[in-house]
Image (cartoon, rainbow, N blue to C red; front, side, top):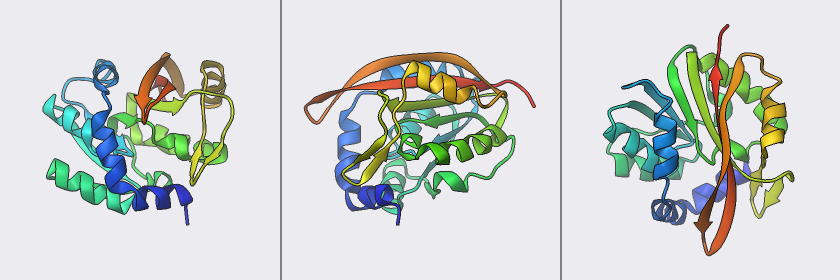
Length: 196
């Protein structure tokens, strides 16, 4: 079994509670500034549903998904709408989304899995659609307890994206976020699907 999903299933209530304590407004607003008004968004690894709720409030159409059944259940109760259980590698849509929002989610995939996922993301995005992705900042990948982390820096992600000619870097930066008494540094970026 995927130990990362196992961790989130076992700690769903704690994770969801902590999620609501974190402020993400700046990241949410920045992301939405690149999405056409009323656009179709996939919240890819939606966690608590916090971001989905904000995007819905702003008038966007949102499909929330997560790989953890327990988290989907809690997010569905909070959002009062279905949250689809979907592991990242199960994404199988074409020209469906104006934007995909992967906040601290796809970072749990190993590099080889990310390489397999990005063509699926490209396929699922409409032309000129965008992908927002955030990762813990750093060079070293690996497990922390049961969870796997792929970390990114500006150069590391730029090199990674360079392997997909259809994607163009639009924005990248870092931000700090306090969590559990520690100050984590995060990398975030937006890339655009530029053509077929």
